[in-house]
Length: 89
Ligand SMILES: [Zn+2]
Image 1 (tube, rainbow, N blue to C red):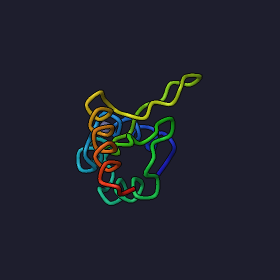
Image 2: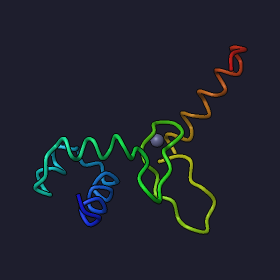
Image 3: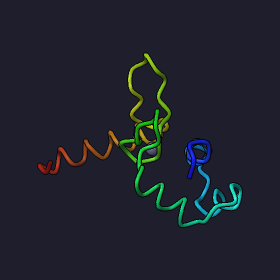
């Protein structure tokens, strides 16, 4: 798999494409796409959302974005608050 294909896979992953859709579009095997994703769980230039794990595109020179959306930010904080009050970690 060449670098151009990898770049395209990573861009499509950001758009939420499924491995099947990516394989079809690029004319490569689904297993090739899946194994790439397994070996590279984090897309370069992104960080996984701390709430849902979806990749969040980072802007260079800015503070790291931890959440993919306001909804995740709120969910995450509510969740943490509940865990704290339970006396659990
Ligand atoms: Zn999220």
